[in-house]
Length: 285
Length: 321
View (cartoon, rainbow over the protein chains, first blue to last red):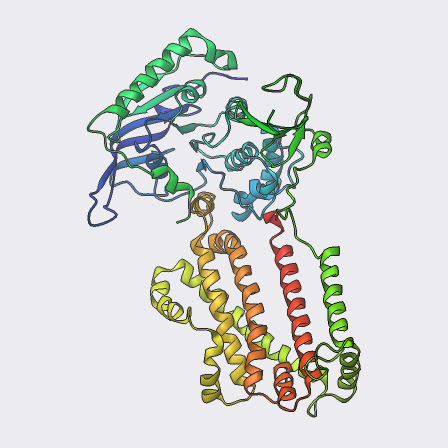
């Protein structure tokens, strides 16, 4: 089992490249003004790396993730994933949504294989992989259940398996454990580490939880409140990380650094936030 | 000591009720456990979410809340029996004139006569089939055209802008208000009744289908796009399926309304049908036939409802209701 990033910062193995990305939202009514959601964002995610995108709420984290996923178009700059410009959504960039976007009328198994099946890929290829994925996220035996029969954590496991079956270049996770209770969240964080050590996916993880970012990521981009990147934190703790890590002095120290950076951003008087960005996401159009 | 006490304990509620203690789980079940000290459990069950714990505790029962599927139970049959008994008593004791309310026995013998002789030159079955035929033709056309139209209105802003005003205008008008116009346009034949039912069914199916499409969660559509679905597949395999509960609500409502409207339309102008029979029998003071007609209309309405509910449960079993 490899536990370090093989290609760490090897320029030949950039999976996501963000080059001066900017996004401005047009005013929603005559009275409001346009909102700069992202401004001059530069950054990259290397192969097999887990990178956190941490920032105060409304700083444009989800906006950036939506741009990479292809759900939205940037106004400036370029987004390149695995050598290709992002133009539309596609299975090379799988999203794990905060509120599990499972197809309620399909069983766990049908949900997981939905993508490859509808793209008419070879069942002999994806079915064995789906079985081992379901096994590794701990859903063996629940294949025939419907989403309404699953708990929140279980639904996220299905989403994770569904995303990974498509063998994406990058996995985009939008606060995937944000809606779970604290015990389930910590179980899911451990599960994500296990899954990573098995399949080594490249992950961009949006979170507002400093502890989660430190525990899960190799590197963290801390965003400022103007839609830019404030600083990059290299998380020094080796993999595999154990739960004990979060009790260590080094961890506490880093967490303090991160939290005070976040607090500084949140308290800046010139801060303009896109209030309500998150709540609108999970809701109806 | 209070009868109930709640302590918040790591985000879960421990509920105490006179020595009975429950752990509220996410699934809405309650797990029984023993409480030895005030303030929280000292000994958690070995396998708290285990099947046997769930079964032993069951759910807390609130007698004033209908939990799970409401069903036609013993009490419902008791209601039916009570009404029949009251009817019998009222007529047998002569509290109400036999002309206004015939006795159950009288009605039953009149019913047998009706079955044998028919009414106004047509058998009872022909009257029933006439009403059913009108209903199903109008309803079927309404669904066949209404569902695609509603899906179009839900997914296209342009279609919604064009067709929206028509349906907004129709909203406050009861469908039976169109009966005179239908007779004026199409006479008193089959077509006017079928057209009326078609219009009413169309209205309910279109509105619910378009609402269904418009309320599909954005993330679900995005998940479909993310998996690389084409536009047609996205519509057929995600949007349509997600809108199906709304579409079925529209179809259920349309079915109930159609049956009510066919009777109303037949009351005003028809040569056959249950509504015609009721109206005609009233004119000629054949009161038992009025009652028989009304009872048959009610029974068929209940049956139609049961059929649509059964289809709904079959199609939407995944909602876990």
